[in-house]
Amino acid sequence: MAMVTADASATAVAATKLPDAADKEYSSYNGASTAGGPRSRVGGGGGGGVVDSVVARWRRDEMLDKSPLALHAAAAAFAFVALVLVASNQHGDWMQFDRYQEYRYLLAIASLAFLYSLAQALRHAHRMRGGADPVSSPSGRIFDFVADQVVAYLLMSALSAATPITNRMRTAVVNNFTDATAAAISMAFLAFVSLALAATVSGYKLSKQTYM
Image (cartoon, rainbow, N blue to C red; front, side, top):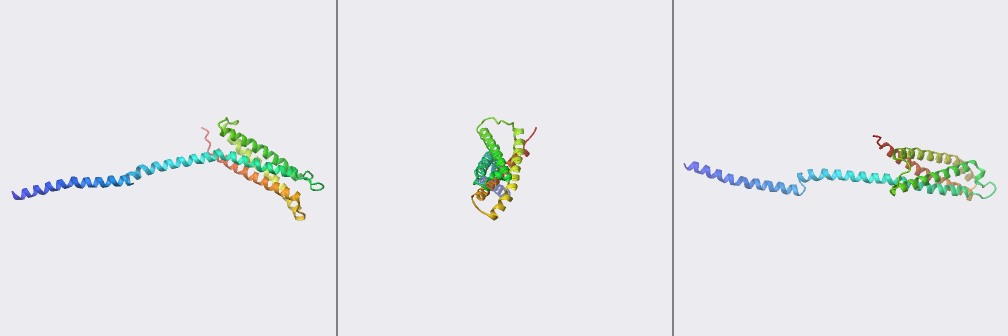
């Protein structure tokens, strides 16, 4: 009878300790979860990653949307400086740009690049201000990609024609005429780089375009 009573007392003591241990274990787990434990990592980490990826995509899309305006404006500025340098390069005798077909070709292509880049910059500025794009979205991206490449290649061909004759002149004499032509070639090259980058952006947008 005494043994039964002792066993019953031990069982009762153990039963009273079990809830206390369970409460302590739950409290420690809850504290760990609140402090950034397993529960917070599962709930917060995944959601934060999704939000970060969405924000990064928005920023990338915004940059791609603004870059054509900046690149075409830069190309228009460089091409304008190039055509002004060539057109004003008249110092008499052999130092007349119109006596050389290479410089006449450079002037024509620089003028074309200026007019095209200015029109594209105005178009993108109007679109970004909320106006309607004169060219529909699918056709506009194809037009941008093709036209940017064509004008960029024309600039490169003009540079290839004007650079050799300028180098030959500068080996014999360096004066205002040769300096102006060299500066014009440099500006035309910067216009080419701007249009080449614009064509790259247009190609990327075209590759991401959906037709369904």
